Image (tube, rainbow, N blue to C red; front, side, top):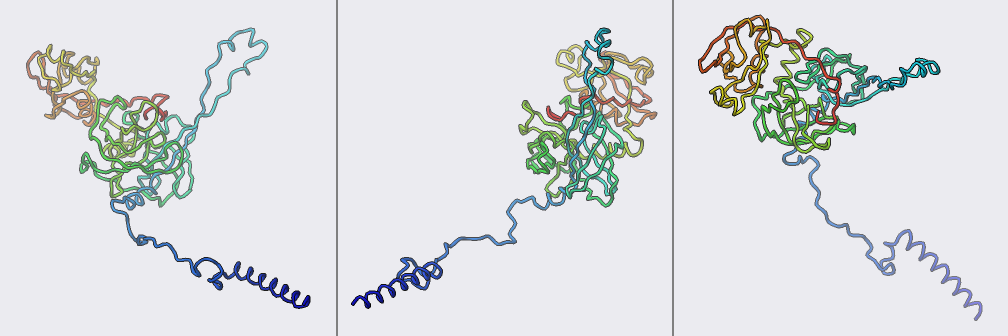
Length: 393
C-alpha cells in the first residue's frame, strides 16, 4: 500500500509540474484549466489611412519655407562703467590703472531669412547692430560666420552674407495681393528653443504711427511672435515670404497677439538699395514736419488729416531755397495727397535726389505750388540699444 501511495504522489507531483510549465509557456493548450479564453481577442479600433493629409494643413507651406529661416547668434563686448573711485589719485597710487573693470561679453539671438542661394540673408538691424561676431546656424545644422553687407536703421533691416553656396532661398511673395483675414505663418527661433512655426491671420495692413521705426508700413498679425523671432519670416499659405517679423506690442515681453512685420515690398527696396550703394538713398527737403491736431486744423483753416504742418525749415536746405516757410501746410507731393506726417515722409523719401519735384502747399488759405530740387537724406545712426529684442523689438 505504501508503494502505491509513493507512486501516486510522484505522478501527481510530475503532473502538477508539467501543468505549471504548460500553463506558463503555452496557456492556450489548456483552455479548460486556464480560466480564460485560448486567444485574446484584440479590441477593435479605427485607424486613419497613412497617406491622409489633415484638412486645412499648412505642412506644404512650412516645408517650403522652413529650410530658408536661420538662427542668428551675436556677441559683442560691453565696456562697464568705471567707478568714480578709480579716478581718485590715492586709489591709483595703491591699485594703479589695472583696477578698471574688464569688458563683458553680451549675447543675443534672433532669426534671419535666406533670400539668395549665394548666401545673402535679410534680418532686423537690431539683431546684428554693433555685434562683434555674427554666427548663423542653418536648419540642416551647418554653421557660418556672417558679415554685414549693409544696414538701414530707419526701417530696422540689415543684409548680411555667409560664405556658403547653393542655399535654400525663400520665394518672395506679393504683399499687394494680401488682404486682412488671410492666414499667415511666422517662423523663427523664439527664446532660443529652436525653429518654431506659429499661425495667425493678417490683422491689419499699412500700420503706421507706432513710433517703432522712422519709416513704417507694418503688417499686423496675431501669429505668435516672441523674443528671438525678430528677423524671421512671415509667410503666406503657399510658403512665400510676405514680411520680416520685427516687433511686438507687449507689456511683459511675451506675445499678446499683436505683432508687426515689415512687408516684403520694403524688404526688396532696402536690399536693392544696399546692394547698389551700400546703404539706402532717400529723398530729403530739409523740413521738420508736424501732425495737424484738431486745434492746429482750426487755427490754419484746414481739415484734419488733410496735410502736414511745416513746423521748421533747415536754413540752406532744399525747402529753404525753394521758399517754403514755417507754418506752410504741405498737402501734395507730385499730386499725391500727403495726408499726415508719416505719409509725407514716405513720399519724400521715395523721391530721387537731385531731381525736381512739385509740392503743393497751403499758405494763409491760399494754394501754393512749388518746384523743388530734392536733396539726399542722411542715414540716421543706429542707437546702442537697437539690438534689444525683449521689450517689443
